[in-house]
Length: 103
Image (cartoon, rainbow, N blue to C red):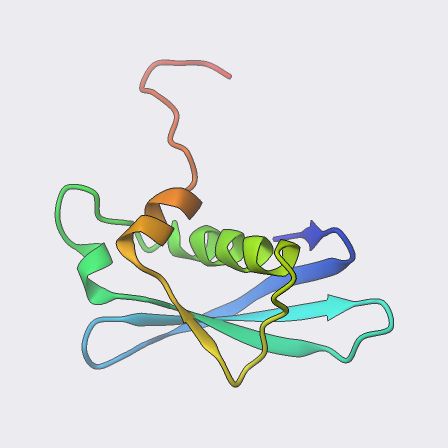
């Protein structure tokens, strides 16, 4: 994962919670700033149904959510977890290539 202007966001890992949610953790660094962590929670319902997310997608979805929050001036920290709604997930989900298309 990468640099969002002056901030670098790096996926650290995830934790599975008892109710099926996932809590993702990211490190956020920037020149002249104390390093911090931020968490993003993905609800269990996001992993079911026809629009379900794959476990491979969740790190990118969380990264995009944090990138947007930082760009809007909200620098997250470990005391606040962003909880993604299904709308957040669709807005931040990596776009899938159509089958058979070449880039």
